[in-house]
Length: 118
Image 1 (cartoon, rainbow, N blue to C red):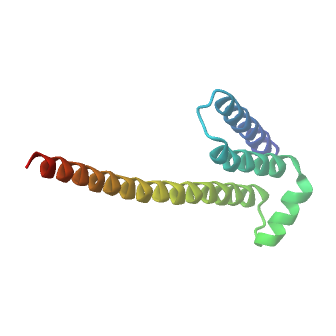
Image 2: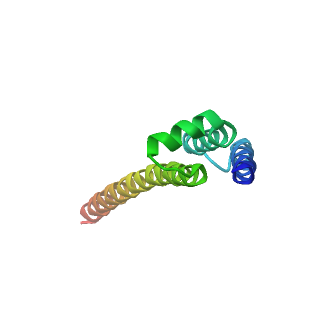
């Protein structure tokens, strides 16, 4: 369990540092970085707190703490991925609506130009 906790600690610190550096260089927007920073902090707390791990193991009804940790890590990342799927879907819908509005404006501009020529 100690080796898994240490690997998870290194991973979570690396994730937090990578997100902060990307945020500093404007490679990622603030509203998207919050999810990743939250996931990194949850992983850091889970990997360092034995009391939280024991509680989590009992709450999940699993006898093996590393398995409970891996299940929780998977759930955290699934939640982050689901949030980003919602954001991408919203952006796609907004893009379609914007494209349709531009097409309507172009149609009206062309119709106005054709009418003025006659």
